[in-house]
Amino acid sequence: MDDERPDIRVVIVDDQSMIRLGLRMILDHEPGIVTVGEARDGAEAVEVARAVRPDVVLMDIRMPVLDGVEATRRIRSDPDLDDVRVAVLTTFDDEEYVTGALHAGADGFLLKDTDPGTLVACVQRVSAGGSMLDPAVTALVLGQWRASVPARPGGGQPAWAVGSLTPRELEVLRAVARGSANADIATELDLSLATVKAHVHTLLGKLGCTARTQLVVAAYESGLVVPGT
Image (cartoon, helix red, strand yellow):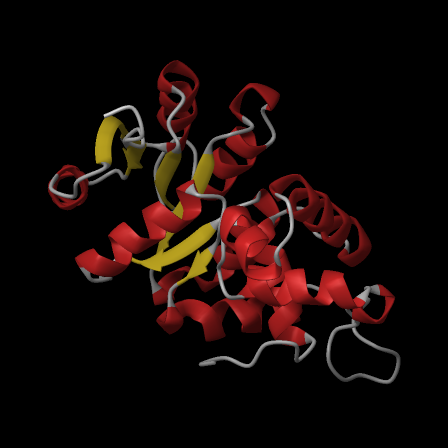
């Protein structure tokens, strides 16, 4: 049918072949998702991404040759890979890498022991332009990010410039923090897709962020969104 959406094309990156196999079995079993490549380290991940131009790279963090943080940074900073999204696989032992992955532009965070449904949902949401933080890793991400952003004079919570946002920009920021993709935000707020994209671009600039996941953290840190709601 002409109105059928194309499959979401995924590259799986992990230095353990059994994990790659397990992820491939889950994703290839899901209608609308197809694995188009694999990589054993970060350097190979960048090469494969440039060769096959996937929609989503599912990226491990701890790998030989080149880790997942630097691989994510190279993919997200490559103009030819502007449409490639990255979802990072992490464990609670990877705390020191989380802030780096946020800075590098990761669009999602998943725990390695996540259930298949959450994995599929993350790939779908990230490919649609949204972001996703596994509930179990949200506190870890917020804690790491809190230590890396400017604090208000005298201490206290990080100083996000949410006071400079318009009411409409605040609405868009809340929707982004819920993980909504641009198309969903456009429908929810009765805006054109181009207008939503323009608002997101403005939010990144006003809040000093370089990736959509950083907007999510800014919304949580500023109190606009409460974890669990």
